[in-house]
Length: 229
Image (cartoon, rainbow, N blue to C red; front, side):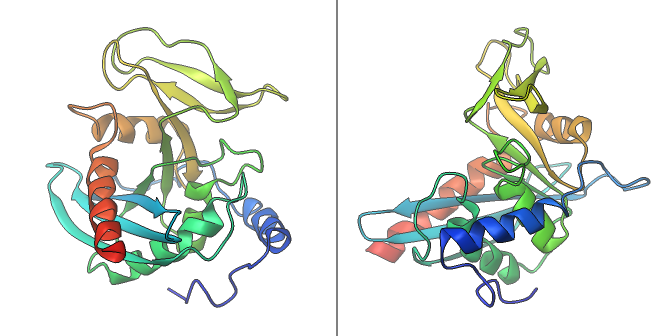
């Protein structure tokens, strides 16, 4: 993988231009004949805005057992300002570095964030998928700028996630635990929405959030504590 900092935008204007180019490369279907993933990676990032530091973690799980098989972290100073819609330009440099430190390239990546459920249709999951060529899905905790009907109570029930302005379907509100508020699944890259939701349910046998996200969240927070200690 090339150095993510080599041509990384330094201003919001540059970031918007790059985001538009990447958006045209996003693919929202699973390639025909793609095998089921054997390994699933989880990506998360933690911040200390007071000290201007952040830490990223990537954790790889066996898709059948959900046991951790590999993990890596990276961190350092925050190098891009907070701009709504451009979060990927803050978070992806350390995420890409952490991915490079893995011994195993995951078959698919689950991001704690959005894919095409994004004003530019290129959230962090889509951005990461295009840059790496790895299929990605965004599984977010909140619906951001989108609306949805309340899914039926049982686990696995879902409802379309809709753009408030255009009415376009950009993902699904998916119930991963019976009677528990849904998560918000959107395609990142190279993975159709049915496969993205099936993978999300596979990664949530006991909790609302995917096991990939839960492991990556703990690991990036531990890394951040060490960075700012």
